[in-house]
Length: 183
Image (cartoon, rainbow, N blue to C red; front, side, top):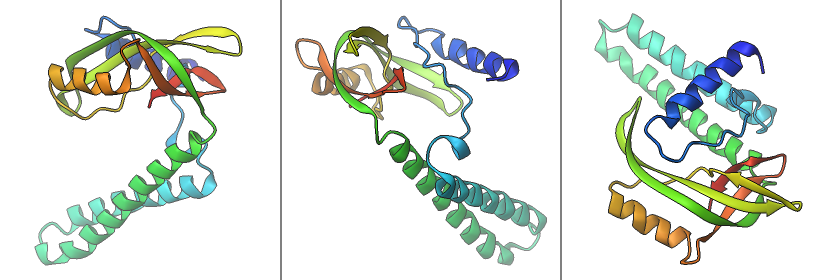
């Protein structure tokens, strides 16, 4: 990773930790392009094609803004492009994580808070887990996918994912054990 890329990645991680008691444990792979992150050339090409379609439709709509009758074509191209990008991103993520290991971990800390990002304010969960891989104890902050709102809803979500003994299932990247997802 270049120094400039590394600088911006660290800046992103540091700004993402502001206000959190549990600090994000970086997996150290920031800056990987979605076009080149393990999904393969076909998936990358689909995402790139969708992106080009989105940009082309947007530019065409701007250039013909005076004639609202001509917006049906760019709207269709925009929707098809958005579909390509979305489907490509989903397939890319599934392929990239297909060889990840399912591991039982101990959740040693959890935090639910209201955060602000580029899309506004929302609720987020951060957990810290400990697990053993190849006889090595690893501490990580798995990604938690939760789209709820409120402290109580977050607590209920975690109670479903983490048992009363603090054990949970995570999916771990065998090539980078700090990169994990809560299952």
